[in-house]
Length: 393
Image (cartoon, rainbow, N blue to C red; front, side):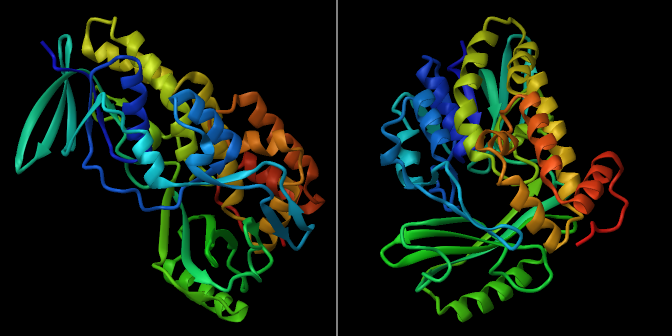
């Protein structure tokens, strides 16, 4: 008899949410995780957090995150704009605790593979210098992106004091294309942390080859010096593969970044995983009625990467191809037009769970809103392979 209905591998937000969601369906869950605290800064839109909290049965979202009511966007093309949707910065410790119900058994171990024999799936786990096969009904693989994407988002962040010239007290700056210097297409991203501190990041949204982190660190240091800000914490380094290859090394069920559920232009994946975890759990429950383990995994995987989600992913991949050649002025003009669209349109484009027709609508509206030369070059870029010169300024 199998001890576990589900083995979930991966201690990040995706794996932890998947384990909690499966346990809430009454499944016997083994979570392969050492419980290491999450260190990155995770953010999402406030209404996405509300949706995720409801689906996962979590407490009041206000207990899980800091809410920013009026995030700012600054561009040279259209000045400063206040975005209507509220933004949220997760409290990692509180969310991690909320997603660790007693019904989930947590054990350390590194997943080395997934095998299937008849009705049983096996998680091949390495721990304490030994390899063992853990039998289960289904193995969910949420161990992060596999392989490197063809492009990366990179950022260098510093926790500083005295950053009022860059981010208002209690506020958030979602994109600032005005403050950074030089020709590199980078923008400033900043969050007030309270207590006179702020996280200020210089971000390269998407580049192939990626921007050197040292370049970002040096440019940010100059910007902070000129703003009178002083470092008061550890730096934050970000390097996110964009367009990663979904995990496919055995009869497991990939989830989160391992399933390719990463926005190919922004690198965002945590919101997607938190909101998709209940659907994954429902798919696992349905698939347990399938006798053969390999077919069980395939059935659950089809729910995670449904035809609709694959179509949305293909559209967003094409959107990434359009962004990669943009120089700094092109990025400024593009995002000025994009974020000036009605909120439902640009929000749909930023959501890997959005239906394809909404993404197409957002792409069409963005194209129509761009300045003439940039519109023509963007249209060419969306139709041709990426072997072309940079878009015009």
